[in-house]
Length: 381
Image 1 (cartoon, helix red, strand yellow):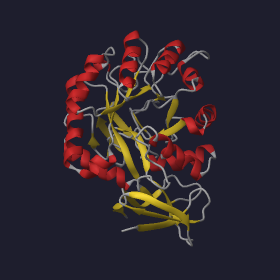
Image 2 (tube, one colour):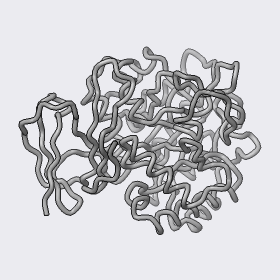
Image 3 (cartoon, rainbow, N blue to C red):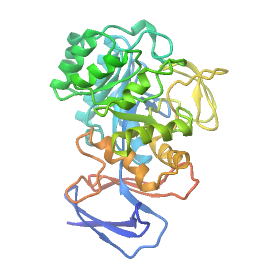
């Protein structure tokens, strides 16, 4: 039986109706609606490490924790997300993959919202700066055999891999993984521009949180950021929380890449959504969460992941860049959706993953009113 949702079109502000049946959008048409709710596709987040004390990286993750995290993401309007496992021992990474695989098997909600897993590291730069908050003790050389062991343990669940292409072994892994249909991103790197371009030639297609996970001091040119901005084969993922990238930097990067080759990620970690205070987390150890959403080691200028969900990043990016609601929504839906099985689209035939939300110019978040996953309402305020 066909169902119908109405709201304001984020592009025009006028009323729009979306009909759906069997979990798929069947029609989109103008509607007589002048209420406060916008209607759009659900958000797609390629980088979620945890939220509200639900940590994917402490070595004790369970299927139940993955379910709880999924429910929180849905409450914040994120209908598709990639659980992200960071640099750790092989045993911890494998245990995380197995727990996520089991969660997808047990819980249909997780299976629908989580298409695959993002592994960020451990094949990254060992050096301070580009390594970021990743633990140096577990950084190691790129290893195709280890990657294959992850896939064997998880049933091929690794669908996005972030690495630093600073070695021949890393380039070989890029070629190997992309040959299996895995997306490869460049991140936490001190590779040369030549190595960046070699990775893209080998199949890398993303830059993980470009401008972060980099040395504090870089040559004016050439450097790792310019090389990734210039390479048209690479889509830039950007954290738009107003802390990871200053407004001028974010605007310039979006202009350099173009709105079709950029997307937003949250990079949210376990203290996200909690009250301001001091916390201990796997990524970065002792950290301070400030009232404005900034998260990092106390008394330092450094960051240790992010504390804001993607819905907040959308609103803050609008404020930082002057782009429209519709343009920035594309950076958090359609564009990341291209790397997650074509999700995040509002068109006939697409999955009926939808959100209704309130927003006004100057707001620091999208106020999610309802979330629909494959046409089923899974959260409402």
